[in-house]
Image (tube, rainbow, N blue to C red):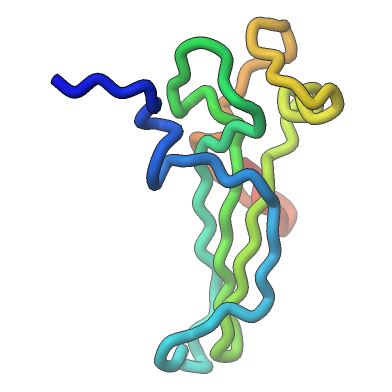
Length: 119
């Protein structure tokens, strides 16, 4: 058995994305039909700080990633789900795991309410 110090939930495809970003002009290879319009949104764990102790991907802060297609163009945007835990950690610039700042289940589902996507 191979023993590695890298947590599989924090490496490779699962590595955290450390920045929120907006890309308004994604390069399209080929052509997107102009009548195709919509948005794909996915969520997942994305710890904003290095984890303390053992880490499971359900522990990560929720981050929404969205690709919008409209008029033959594609855009991308990602944003953290700003839970009570996320806001407390963001304001102190530290991982507060172990402190009573609320749990984090915001990386497991997405719903749309009043025209907004919620984690």
